[in-house]
Length: 158
Image (cartoon, rainbow, N blue to C red; front, side, top):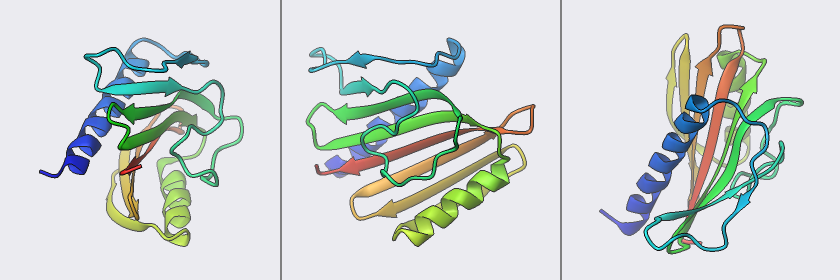
């Protein structure tokens, strides 16, 4: 398996674990933690972003929902600095279908190729790629009619 695919898999696993941990340990609105270098046994370096701004690694023009409750907001850097992953997790007032349409339109109109899509009543998934970037989006239904959105974009070979 090529190195960039291994790094991509590691970053996606880390993002999933961190997203699950944030849900398990409760919702915290602000994260501030700048590590200049990871401990020797750590495979990634995490830069948590305070507030609702987009973390490094997500496209600057990515659509965002005004006044969304941002639950997680960070950039993960591979120890070798050959890859980074920007991730934002937020609660949306829009439905899964509405969010899926917004992001499908964004990626299609901005030169990304939609590489996978799963649409179900309570969960949807979207994947897209462009050059050396891979985007994954998860949409999970909430009981209030909205949904939780997790957006991650991994960039390899920095």
